[in-house]
Length: 248
Image 1: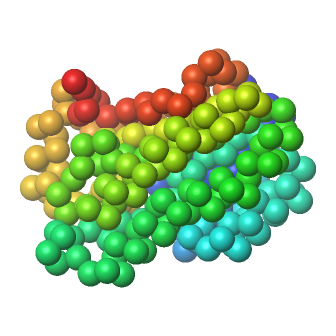
Image 2: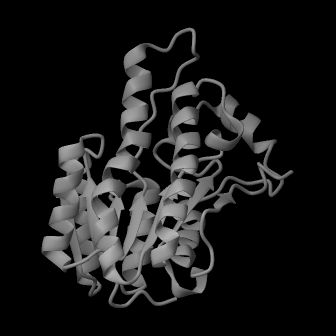
């Protein structure tokens, strides 16, 4: 699938699943703006690596939970590449704890980044997407937003909100040919999941019909499909990339 001539903005695009998404889109021919917040070294090295392979890459530091910084991020993308065709909303954090032990700050921080951050960037990027003539919005939710997960009331709430927000975006953008879809990864090997205890990982593994954890490429290849012409008639859906965890 070729994305030659397209411009993609990837939030949280320097590490973990975001890095894989960036690489996949760049190798498909898209020019990519990598947004990062605390991964400056990774962003710089990723930029150098991909540019060495002929890709057009720019990096920009922004905290997507900030309305003003989200606007600066979109403005910089337009200034650098002239447009935005593909918006990948991947930036996210975790502050896990059981509800009885979770403090208010841990809830607010996750909601601000994982949910409001999606709204912030979407708000500023929607007009350029409408003008671009080719609009793809892809949000990265989670099976935690579908099933819920003990110890993640904040994260589950945020990721469930992302699904609802994506469906609303799909309805608002449909008249202008913009598609909006969510991906709900299951247990994907990443820096975030490395923090889980072996006991929790084993418990999850027993719930996966395919019998293995996913990898970042499982998600990024799905992003590539949804970002391509081949997915032009798919919008408002939540695609589980979870080995069957949420099968009904």
